Image 1 (tube, rainbow, N blue to C red):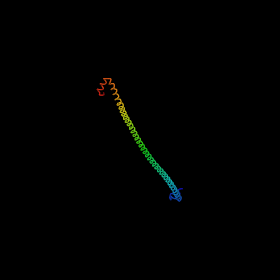
Image 2: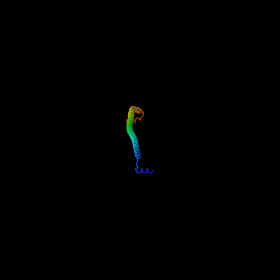
Image 3: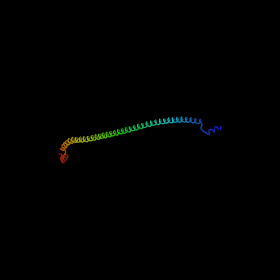
Image 4: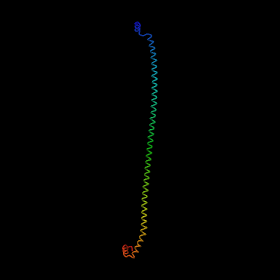
Length: 161
């Protein structure tokens, strides 16, 4: 037994060892190729995953753009609605002012008409009753003064007889 070990120890490398190394090297190369293929497959999977993430990112960006457009549209609609309400409020204030002015004008016209009508009626009544009644009263007093001396003296003092 020592002789084989001694022989192996002297030379150290036999044909069997060489064949084993060749087979080991071939197996190792095959293993390396398989590992490389697996790494390539894994790289492809990572690339696919990266592409999917990029697709998802682009979709999110598109969604963000749509949301921004919707926000912009909603704010424009809100501004338009606010503008319409302001216009409507302004219009209502104008209508209220017009109705207030018309009401004040009608009230002023009624007061003026009432005063002018009352003045005219009073003047007419005064003229009618004062002019008609006064001469008649004087006639009555003159008739009475014919029989009543005291009344005749009073009427003469005032220049009515």
